[in-house]
Amino acid sequence: MSRPSIEMNLPPSLLNFYQKQQEYAGLQALREASADLVARAEKLAEMSNIMADGGEAIGGVLRNWPHVFSILSLFTAQMEKASEDRSRQEDEEDEGPLPCLVRLAYGGETPSVEGSGPATITASDKTKQ
Image (tube, rainbow, N blue to C red):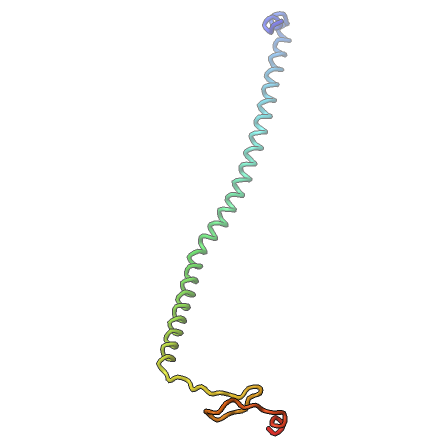
């Protein structure tokens, strides 16, 4: 049985009722589709807000880079100045007189006169000192 044959055999009031049921079913499907669309739009809005917050955070980081670079340039300038000062001091030290080397007694040695070999200290010598 086909629909046109059913529709022709129905009284006009039932035919009208049948059409209204079809319209109502279409309206319900439209409402469900609209609700799904609204849910998706709300989810998209939520994701957009998250992305906007992330964009603000990234913007804050990017705004700080010039400050970071200025701090780095100050640090680099100080390091260069310190290295220049060190090199000047090393140059000045190189130009000065050489230090005098002195041999100090250590352990089992006694101070000796130049030209003589190393001397040893005995236990009795330690008590005398």
